[in-house]
Length: 448
Image 1: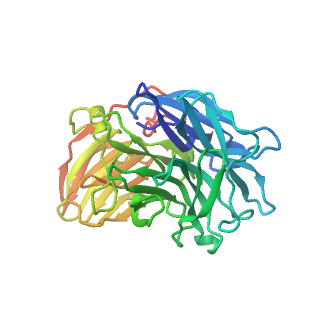
Image 2 (image 1 turned 90 degrees about the vertical axis):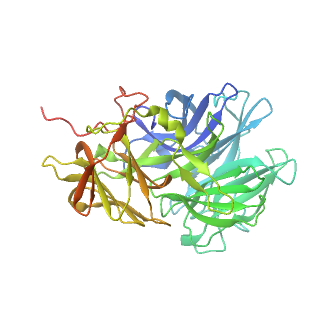
Image 3 (image 1 turned 60 degrees about the horizontal axis):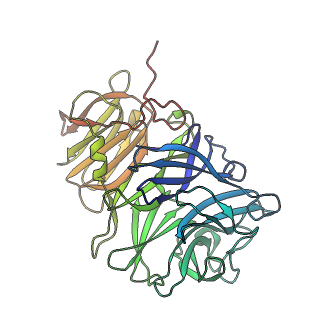
């Protein structure tokens, strides 16, 4: 349901699907700590496998930083493998060190494998294959040149790469952009001016390109300041690109798109945790969250919806307290749903909605998250997996937060002073016996 390797946290990742239908995730991994030094702690890629995108099995480390004096000697960051010949080519971010001002020096390298399962990588030479061009992008201090994503060009037999970069023509605080480059052979690249440069984004990370059924394109990019992600669409790779607004709410990050076992498009993303598993703990790198369905209606903005593939993990309805559950609530006027209570029976985790305003609250009314809906909601679907909370409004993913407070209680919806019990469907966890940093929060300890 959620995944991180034992004892570690997940950051940016890539997804593969082998010919036999097995999925593999390659991910940045590091220790579970708030004082995170990405130059010393994100120096390898972990790997896990799955048959259904829900239950993941750790499969060890498959790639690490380079030897001394190479462009990737200090760290290796976000990667993207693509099918190439009978194997794969993987583009990845290499960090050689720091500028005098302490900014990571980034470039993009290439590795090959004769396999298609995400293992067996060997580097292509000792230097990068694509670097930032100072004519259009910042180099040195406050630079960005990371998170490559490669697809086939729609106007030639070659390839297109998009990269997270910093637009040299803009103030650094709003210079986040998507750079792009082209190649005929994956080894020699020509860098071009920015593909997308919004002018109001600090960092536009982890860009993803997806070709849609009608031949048009979808671009998804993570926004550093909001810790969510947005979407753009275009009739062809070279644009023009139209900004479509937020796609994933704050707390969801670094998305990837892949075909689910039933052939439908789904998006997986990361979600944070809190150090110490408490509401007061610092946010840290987290875990891989469960899939969402990607819907791209004609003439409308893309959206993420509840994925029916999760329905098989739901048990029959109950009104008993349960920590991992899904419940549906009709919205008619202002409603507040209590999911967990404190030791005195007061609300410890509440989801509320008064039409367009949607929020999640903790003990003593502490605000955990909020959003304004585009249209008033008629139904809410709430999912809790341990500390992790998701809310869907009329089937669309709109809010996520973390809550480590309280004890499971029967879900209770309150409208105009009237209370009603909400039936829920408990979630069956893929590996409920795990007891490490990747296990879901088991709830408050029972006093001895």
